[in-house]
Each structure stands twice: as structure tokens, then as C-alpha cells.
Length: 156
Image 1: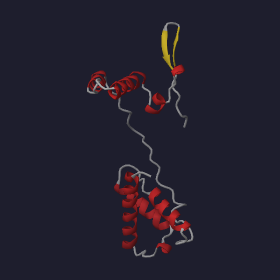
Image 2: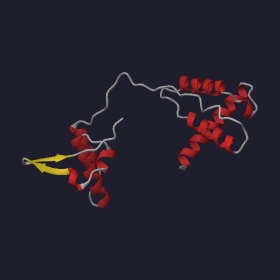
Image 3: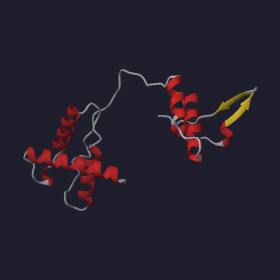
Image 4: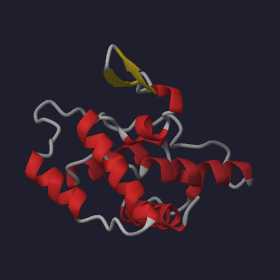
């Protein structure tokens, strides 16, 4: 786990424990699924995007269960809110923005040339980064005097 995740988890656990103290839950063994769910609901009301903090609380209590500090994980049965975007559309770069983006990449280094090629390919083909990076040489081919690319996307 990277330092960024550790810091985010530390912050989430600190917030949760402060919330528990404010709601008169002073012992870890006294934390119930209702407490975790109430805290998650309170977090969802404060943020516009769904909270990712439930994972931190689950990991904390998993660790405490393994260490035999608490008998069960009260966060394991709690489900986070669903985040469904009903309105909006994916932003698309217009040609001027795409040209500006590609031109600002330094083409004097191998990394710069790589980045320009990759971003140019993604803008032209509307490919996701994972599909572009997952391509093999045989995924670029010619058929009837046209050039084609085969993109492999993970299906949901």
C-alpha cells in the first residue's frame, strides 16, 4: 500500500474514531454495524462523490479481528452508497485542445516522443489508456489499404 493510501486511511480512521467518541462509543468492541453505517451516511451527506472511507474502516476492523482485539468486523456487513451519474457526458477534447496538449510535450527526449505518440493515438482512436498500453504489435494491421487497430477492453 502506498504512502498516499496509508495517509488517506489514517485520516478516515481518525475521523471515524472522533465521530464514535462524539456519539459516546468509547470502546472498539462497542462499535456496531449501525455506527459504521451512520458514519458512512453522514460522510455521504458532506461529500458530492461517494466516500471511499468505508474500505479504511473495514481494513482497521479486519486487522483488529486478526489480532483478536474485537470478535467480529462491524464494517463487513455495511454497504456504501451507490454512485450513479444520471446526467452529464464524458468531456471530449476539441481539435485545438488536442493539438495544444500534444504540442506542449517535449519531443526531444525518448519519453516525450513516447508520450506524444501515446496521447496522439488515444485522442485519434478514443482508446482508454489501459487498452492502448495493452496492445501488441499484431493489434496494428492493414486490411484493404486501410490501417486498423484492435483494442482489447475489459468487459464490465
